Length: 169
Length: 186
Length: 169
Image (cartoon, rainbow over all chains, first blue to last red; front, side, top):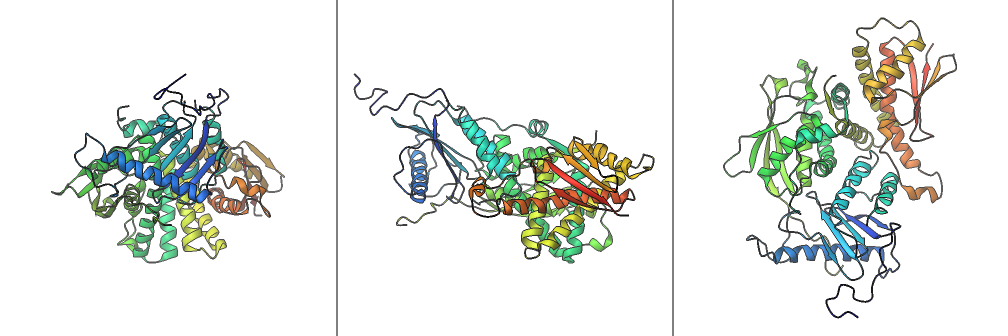
């Protein structure tokens, strides 16, 4: 029996599977807030249509970033809440965890945001996000027939991404 | 996790795939020549080379960031420095230096002593007014714009015009913060 | 060993050159764009073959010149040789590169295959535009060796690419 503050509050998620099924879904947003890639591996529940879902995710990140920077006790210069920041300005969070999932987040100075939703027990995924950014560079940015800013539809990227996320633990 | 220091341009250049610079240099030369034939006016060629460079810079910035581990580009001085020292080195194999900062730190020069684009190039007299390396100024402008810095990039010195180095002046016009892209009641 | 630059320099330059000609300069006349891209390749091939054959005796027959393209010339450009050479002994040669470097990062929309008509047609079109450049290189190189010819590319078995050389008699 566990009380408040225990690490496993019901509803408890299934234990991470060894077979490499820990990633639920991934979003990539560009600097204009457009979700140009959404990929899903394991998402039993859909409550919104895709567009609303992407917008909500972007809003969550945008507000959370603004709030975390505002609450930063170490930094002198911070704008008012909601005042736009430069990508990379101020502090930033890299993950949060609920009892049912973990969200890992990376933003590049070029404004690319990569969000990975995984099992709550997965470890620090900052290196994994960097790896995914590198996959994006190799197979999307350097794909001669990909137009920058367009939705990502590149088979080589999808295959290498699917393969990689299976290794996430 | 402590912030990771950017990797050096030398280290990255050593780790990426290389190609024969002749192929690159001659291809660039052939493109310039074809543009001169197709567009006829030197001014228009300068403009198109700059535009092509801009588009390349827009793509190249992510490779630069991914491979160099540069995680923030907020300060113009730092950014100009890292683009010159790491960026030029990791792609062209030659480092550039940053000089001539103005008092308020919004304008500087990127100086290249060695430039693989111009190996074997001699401009004929008919090409007066051509900025042969204009693609480079476009690349710098495009890359900086992707990290929220609007700049104006112009040639100050050009070895093909008899100067002792290539010098690009980079002037920061403004830094564009990220806006929330949706309307609230959308 | 001569001077080198990062592979991304040439990749980025080619991508942008092809896109400028196809989407900006000749967006309504793809056949003109193709001709210009081929012409740029021709100049490059011509100059490169001049440089690489400077200290070599003249080739005595067509096959010898083609073998030079398959081995020395291809190695200078792509750090590998052509994998397979076929000929009908009547002036047609097929050079197959099993993993052609300039196609290695190219991939199109994976979902199109399930779509209605002509799968991958747009991606295939974009790829063929790109291939006018190496075709031009080969034609330029052979023309410098005194062999006028026509060159086309076949990408029906990606990532392999076959270049078909028809020598003009």
